[in-house]
Amino acid sequence: MEIPARQSLPAMKKAPSHQGGQKGDPAFRLLVTATGVGVLVVLGAIIAVMVSGGWKAFSTFGPGFLVSAVWNPVTQHFGAAAPVFGTVISSALALLVAVPLAFGTAFWLTALAPPSAAAVIGMAVQLLAAVPSIIFGMWGFFVVVPVVAHYVQPAARQLLGHVPGLSALVAGAPFGTGLFTAALILAVMITPSITAVMRDVFLSMPTVLRESGYGLGATRWEVMRHVVLPWSRQGVVGGIVLGMGRAMGETMAVTFVIGDSNHIGWSLFAPANTIASLIALEFPESPAGSLKLAALMALGAILMAISFVTLWFSRWLLARGEQAAGR
Amino acid sequence: MKANNTLMRADRSASLLWRRHICDKLATGLSWLGMLIVVFMLGSILWTLFKNGLAGMSVHLFTMSMAAPGQPGGLANAIVGSLIQTGLAILIGAPAGLMTGIYLAEYGTTSRMARIVRFVSDMLLSAPSILIGLFIYMMLVVPFGHFSGLSGAVALAILAMPIVVRTTEDMLRLVPVAMREAGIALGAPKWRVILFICVRAVRAGIMTGVLLAVARVAGETAPLLFTSLGNSEWSLDLGRPMASLPVAIYQYAGSAYQDWMQQAWTGALLVTLGVLIINIVVRVGTRGGRS
Image (tube, rainbow over all chains, first blue to last red; front, side, top):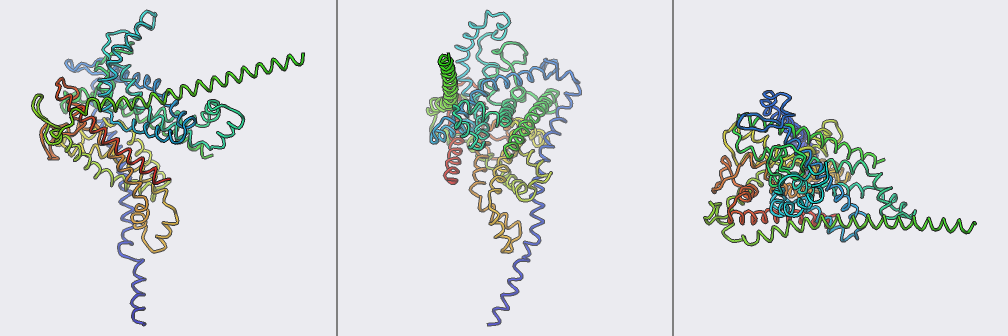
């Protein structure tokens, strides 16, 4: 009887001080911490590579790179103004379309829909967000571009073509490709993600606030307008800014429909370029080490700066919204 | 006089009620319209893909490599290339994301360092994918002097990782304290508690993140243009340019040849169905698990 008991005692004592355990803990801690730090290193490397890659363009053209609208590979003269203009305008136009759509959908999902329908439509919205961007590009080029060329632009010209001051907005041949079409495609692409953020912040509001609104006899719209929206303002703006960040960095979909022209003008229907589309289109003809590649890298650095600031701003707004919700 | 006043007030309140009612109906109607437009867009995309893509479905598509216009060809090399690059990207990105997620949830938690890592990971999650492509081009393509499937996989891995980081951290935070305490009480070291109790408990949730990462990178085109470039021949060599479905679609869709266009549509249908099916499985699966 005694012998087995003695044998098992040292075995039990040994178990907690298991070799792997003692050495494993600090090693594992080091491993996961190093991976976490690795994420920072990746971002640091991205920033360093973009800036150093574009340095040749920044130093050759100086600050003029930012304001010059020339993009001429023959004379080796490159400027960032036209693609930056295209990026900002197409994203802004996309937001004009996407925000009302996303708000309407989020309102419908959180206040109007029966639960089962909300689940199905919510799923559809998420699926739209998951569609690869190149598919949006093909769909845009073969479905939306003809519609814009045959119906939207002629109609816009009919409507605004003779209004002084506004006629410039609709000038140009009806190609169908251009800023307006790119903005439409971008709007469809970012609507799901803005909707998702809006729905989440609307739903994160304590139900009792909503119910007290209804208890006072408010209509659904009044509850949305005077209770939900003021309460979730920061989260909503954060979601919109996040969508803008997506729109500015989007490449493939825009590349199909933007029309590839480095031109700054008033017309909404004119072919243009965004930073991302210019990089994608010009990269194949930019050998390593060339000034053109440096100019593209510099554009990449500008896009990086714009999108990181945008993302930082949206995260900040969303985090502040969450904090307010916690209180 | 008094009765008249009451009447006027009643009248005014009735008109106010009417206005509020109209406002509500208007907002409701517009909201329905917005929802219907969003659903219509998804329907239009799927309808276009099926209408144009189904005709090109054939055995050749899966057995033959890409060929010159007019020649019999398929997308086999692009499909296999996509599978290899996506698979490799997940093999690199998922463990890295898992470990970063463990660091954030179990070790760093609210420390300054962890907050920065979390923030940077969120940034990478939403960073334009074309920048990742340019970055890898400068890091792995220029120094070696040629495009390669490996560099494409690394670019996709950077895109996949933040998704896994997010889900891993979120999931680990759901593990009840009692479970950790039970592990510690049994004398297990922390790393064993984390790996064999916590991660094991939420492995379904972490798999969800991995699948979403697969769905995300499988359709990525922009980073591959600068890294694996695309290849019209059959090649499994990771050191050489490698074909992928999205890049093949991009090349074919921009062409003027009828048979290339047909294959572009069919390829697009394949990619979209794959990505959407993964998404549906993940979302239906997680909803069932939660309720």
